[in-house]
Image (cartoon, rainbow, N blue to C red; front, side):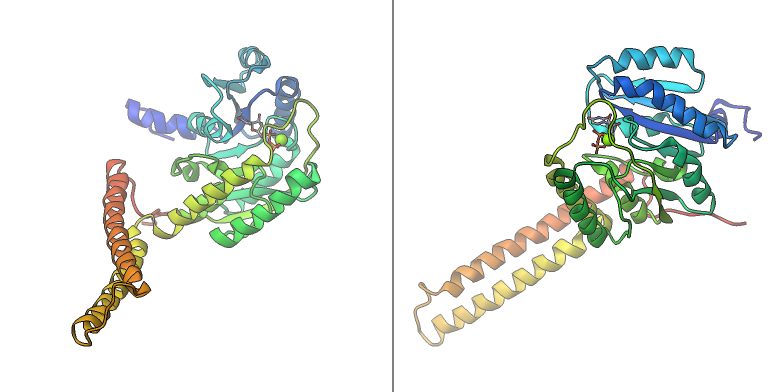
Length: 329
Ligand code: UDP
Ligand code: MG
């Protein structure tokens, strides 16, 4: 690359100078760290790609932080990003993405459950022209009732709602093209919806079966409570997918429908009262009419507000409402 003259293009050169960034969120994984980094390096060296490992310490309290800092000082291929406190897996991954410099990004867990030997396989698939390759833990080694069952149900629902057909959204082992990740903002537990978010952005997505091992050291950071948070995030993603750039289409439609039917009922009741001279004070229809009119006005104004917010969201960040795959001249 030729851009080295000014500082701005320097950044571009830097950003593209590596082939592969491997992002690992770490929260209390002291015993796993050293063998994990060793295993990643061994797996990646076989591909002869230039790479960096970015471990994000998410406020560990078991000494992982110190181990990571020492390792990063010894190894030139390791960068340690130490967060101030425990934010959760999604922010930790976002911090890793922010620091990643390569054209391709791999994510995996810091607990040795994912197998670094699968990295070359994911990369091969990525090179076939996909933007995102997700791992599928075909033989998942976690507790059956508390983990596998909820996960099966969650995967089914996520597939139905988002329209992305993957077997295993929860698998952290994934490969991404860097441009794709740069376009996405992560909140909540949204890292598991990266494929769905990527799909919204028009990415080409696929999956391959990967190995999965039981946890060797430490304990899982999650229990059943995660399912509820995942479902809430799913609703957000669903909304974003459908209506991010056109909220009025949903709120406006239902608002108008509600308002119009309420008004029709109201007119009917007025006729009954004035023309036929009947009493309408005790009719349930009167309550329904009032309810529909109020709800309608509310939905409608909510839609208008959402339109305003959406505009602020896109325009303040100069976020385009489309994504270009490539431009050919
Ligand atoms: N993790 C993190 N911050 C958290 C919780 C988890 O960075 O608040 C990391 C954790 O160290 C691990 C990965 O996220 O590398 C997945 O966590 P875990 O293995 O506990 O999840 P499970 O595999 O049981 O779904
Ligand atoms: Mg794990």
